[in-house]
Structure formats: structure tokens, C-alpha cells
Image 1 (tube, rainbow over the protein chains, first blue to last red):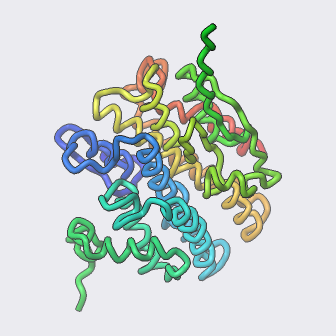
Image 2: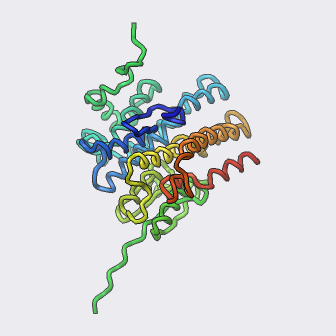
Image 3: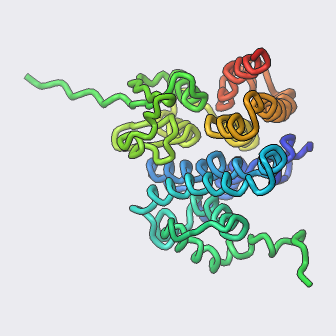
Length: 169
Length: 186
């Protein structure tokens, strides 16, 4: 808890810097390691990246976090969290789909990976693998999911590639 | 006779008076001395679902900022945009660790507290669990977040959260304290 008093992962220790929260870590890495920037110089495009990241961080993910899902399962009833989560994902994905229709290329904001992709990829992955989200409603996001699954940096970050993932068999 | 140049249009802030997300941006604009036009979006009347507003923010949330040809939703994105576009009275320090701490505290509010007492969730709990059941839930979320922030700023707080200058953590104003006390007293 000294690393993250909110008792959340991730937390990053970089020398004498100790940072919790994926947003704070991503922006810290952007400043400290400017190679391969994730945010464009153009202020409007930068703002769009941040806005999409925020939709994930504040508008979707907290509304299916473990605490809330358990609360709903216990207080409302078994299985009741599923329609709730699906509604939150649908709201967020519908908004992002509309926002990137005009600018998506190979990736969300064009042909280069940007911060929006970093935040969208795990959310789409979770929606597909854990919440049975029908991605046909969000064709751009569905296509991006395919891109992320074949990009080396994204592949190496997948949950089942991590040292603490349960081993199969 | 030379005509005067037309003044640049003021940024327009779409806001609801009681929305804490809008409140954050109002503070940021005021601190930076930015004159802006206030346009109210009545959340209780559902004005956030008006097609015209949805063009500004497809998530149907306030705040939204229109600044020339820039259209930005989300208080975080707006705050960081203002920080770049209007560098007077900076809200983020140069030191990377202190900057990260500001962002982390802002994230605790934006992701760890406020969404867990937004109107949609509170209504859901009130309808599905029972009248009044949202209050202990909200109190727990606020307590978790406030306890974390209290521990994080103990070592650096001065007149304000991060010292003697107001920084991005102004997102934790008296609003949350008053909401907390309101809930306790309800």
C-alpha cells in the first residue's frame, strides 16, 4: 500500500519515483521516455487521445471493477452484474466508435499507435473475452482489436503472457 | 480608418451547476484567468441527450469545451488542453514526480471516486437494491479515495494539496467534503 494507497494495480517504481494509476504512469513515461511518443503535438488530436483514455478510465472500467460487480451480485442478485456491465461498455464503445470514425486508420487515431490505443486495447480485450460483448455494433473497434492482437507490444502485454497468469493444464 | 481586429471568441463551457466534473473545469478556467461563456446543460431535464449536445460530447457528459475549432469533452482532457493552450498560471509542476502525483490524485477523483457515485449508478442502486441503499455505498467509495489521498498529500501539503500553490489537485475541492457531509446528514 506504500506503492499505491488505493490498493490498485498498476504501480510503477522508477528509481525514486513511485507512481500508482495507469493514467499517471502513462503520462510520466511519456515525459521521462520521449522516444516513440504516444501523444501528438497537435492540441486537438492530443485532447482527443486524452478524452478517449478518460472514457475508458472513468466511464467504463470503474463501472465494472471487482468491488462494484461483487456489490451488485450480492445486493441485487447473482448474474445481475452482467446486463449492467454490458450497458456501460455499450455506452462507452458507442461514444468512442463515433469519435474515431473520422480519424481511425490502421489504429484509433491514424496509422501510428497513440495513447488512445494503449487505453482502448485492454478494454476491448476485456469486453470480448470476459463480457461477451458483441463487437459487430462497433466495427471500427472490432477492427482495431484485430490489429492490437497482432502488434508485438500489445501481444506481449496480454494477460495470459504475464508471469502470474494461471498456467494451463 | 483601420478597423480593429475582431477579438478572438471566448471559449464556451457547457456545464451543469452541480456537476463536480464541470466544477473542476470552472476552477481551472478561473485560476488561469480565462474569460469564458457559460452554457448550462440541465442534466435533470435530460438536455445532455439533445442531438446538438451529443455532437459535442458523445458520452452525453458535462463538461464540454468549445474553443475555436477545438471541441473537447471530459474534464481531464479539457484540463490538460487548457494547460497546453493557456500556459499562464501552470497547474502542473515541471518535476516529473510531483507532476505524476498531481495526475494520480486527479485520477483517484476521476476514476476511483466520482464514477462510483454518478447519477446512473446511484439510480441503479436505488431502484435495484432499495431506497437509501446508495448512501452507504457512496460513503465507502469516498472514504476509500479520501483516505488514500490524505496519506498521499500528508508529506507535501502546504496551504494547498501540493504545497503553497494551487495545482491540478484542485479537483478535490470542498465540493466532495460537502457531498460527503450531505450524505451523512441525509
